Length: 552
Ligand SMILES: Cc1cc2nc3c(=O)[nH]c(=O)nc-3n(C[C@H](O)[C@H](O)[C@H](O)COP(=O)(O)OP(=O)(O)OC[C@H]3O[C@@H](n4cnc5c(N)ncnc54)[C@H](O)[C@@H]3O)c2cc1C
Picture 1 (cartoon, rainbow, N blue to C red):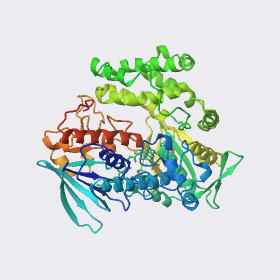
Picture 2 (picture 1 turned 180 degrees about the vertical axis):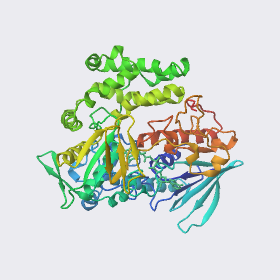
Picture 3 (picture 1 turned 90 degrees about the horizontal axis):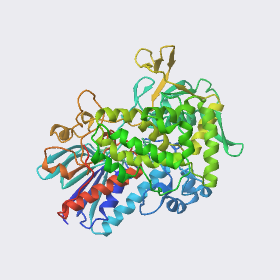
Picture 4 (picture 1 turned 120 degrees about the horizontal axis):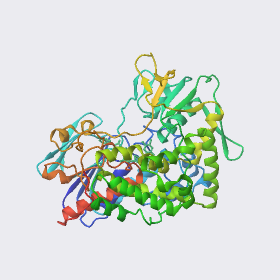
């Protein structure tokens, strides 16, 4: 075949896209990869520019979709010195272990280079352009034009038959938008400006833990104590350093739990059953009908859990309150301590908590349903079941919980519930931010927003010509409610527009997908999206029609 493909961005999504393109019968003749960082393949969260060596990945080798070499094999093939530089001990290599994110970045970059060599050996002309920022994309007749700026700010334009936009996370290059107030913890190097001060952090999940451990690392160190536990030792003259985490529920994430991989099939709330509902129900009744399947699956998986919470009579909102009830009424660190003991014991004995595993598997099938919900039910889902799914799948490495417990024991960390109507003033004080929650006002000389990647809309799309051409547009709202659903794409990730050639464009850029695809973050999703794109290109090149679940 004689067609060209541009990959915009060289993170995990681009790596899996390249790999999937090498498996289709109608191979591309030319592939060009554009990456704005110095090195291709590490993506954003796994690169030393954005992350800190202490930050952990929350995906284990066994969960990473197939690449040329599994992560554990790659780690075992490294020298002791290289492993030490990645903060990994050879005896700790295990297919269910969690490693520093920068180690994962090294692994991903090496797999990318293997795939590049593989492409060359297959006769594909492939060019990897690093320090090359794609500044604009536009549709020009039958082609896609890319404008690219290199390290000397020289701009060039080239035409491609297909472009896969895999630009990933979007964070400002300097998150400290006013003195002491950080709109995100990225790049993590910016957090080094915070020293020996009380710090407020909005969020308690993975991103907030990242911010916590990076700050803790600057102010002291974690050391092993009492066998399995950690102790935090602060550096001298850091007595003012203490972190308060704020969240709406005032709870911490739970510890990673043992479960069979690959997933066992769901019996009732299966992908087929949910797909059937999307055809049978109108958007209005869809969420409640799906919740009925969710309820039946959960009760069948773990009858005593269901009976304990009275699942049979709960509405979707009541279920979510019941799911978090015990945790919100318990001290978060006591809860974390007990949950960790249970998770470690279960991992040791390969015991799976059935209700946790059922919810984990069901988040994937609910992902099919979300694009079909009415705006009203989209909002209901976001405020209810989505929070349960995220809590369940975004569990954290045991090491992360140990670090939080050690910081709390050293009186360096607390968690507080953010009352309804709480307000953050980021402008009045000279530094940081002041929190008002109706009862009190607390000033933090440093404050970090750490609630993770938010959904972005078309106005923030990085390529202005596609916006101007009307190729990239927001999903239209139903009317009264303005739901943040991201940009309009079809089942193949083509932007929905009047342009015939928009089928040559694939938008896999995360923040713009996260509305209707709330669980798209993660390496497993990168692999799934990549396969859809490669299949679509193969179908187009071989003149075959294929269908995908309709999206909006
Ligand atoms: C803090 C954090 C931790 C995470 N940890 C995990 C984890 O442990 N496990 C997991 O499965 N998932 C994790 N994720 C989810 C993460 O979204 C995905 O795993 C993965 O990074 C998505 O890959 P991507 O290639 O789509 O995006 P990214 O990783 O963001 O990569 C996008 C790439 O595109 C480049 N780029 C962007 N714009 C341009 C441009 N205009 N021109 C040229 N290049 C460009 C960027 O430099 C980058 O290299 C984490 C996310 C965050 C935020």
